[in-house]
Image (cartoon, rainbow, N blue to C red):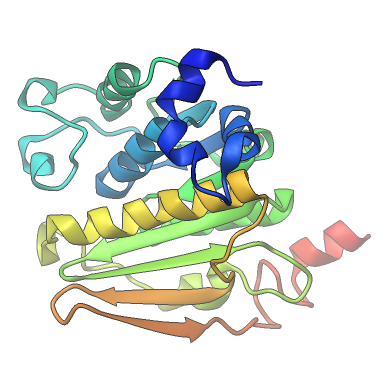
Length: 259
């Protein structure tokens, strides 16, 4: 049962028929792992904090730089030089002190990432490189934890949800590790701030749907690609790769799980 104070704070959200007081209580008891506190992570964390998420784990080993301020909207000039997890946690505390925040100011190794994934209800990938995304995908696959994956560069962004059911694809099916040599990033290709904000906001929205409604209208295993220059969306089904090293029928990981 929500207190009168919390009911008043979240009344606009509670008034949404699909959410209600039960959905708000579910949010208050949820535990979300956010990996990456850049442009995506800032938007995700702020909107989830505002929505009343109960517990949030922030993971990033980077510090705030002046060039981040163009798109990483949680940070201020006075935060430059500070660890991103510290600066973001401070903003969350100012926005909603009811949210419990744990900070991990480091790049997680596979074992700790696996542990943090097991503890979370949902994992939100806000990283900016393929190696980290593949590690997060593997950890979520092993724990069968739902993954909300986002990315943005230039004018374009993408969003996908992976639920790791028996016949579903995983992130490696979409982006095989050995097929990518990442040359484009925000430094080399640039990024338009609202594009990354759009994807981050949608990642937060999907998380709220899943937690508050115990489901999501957002279909898993579909890649949603946003073109901010043309203001268009394109959606593609992600086929399961039966030879995928993570979720394929012949993968060593799958075989170990079934043994």
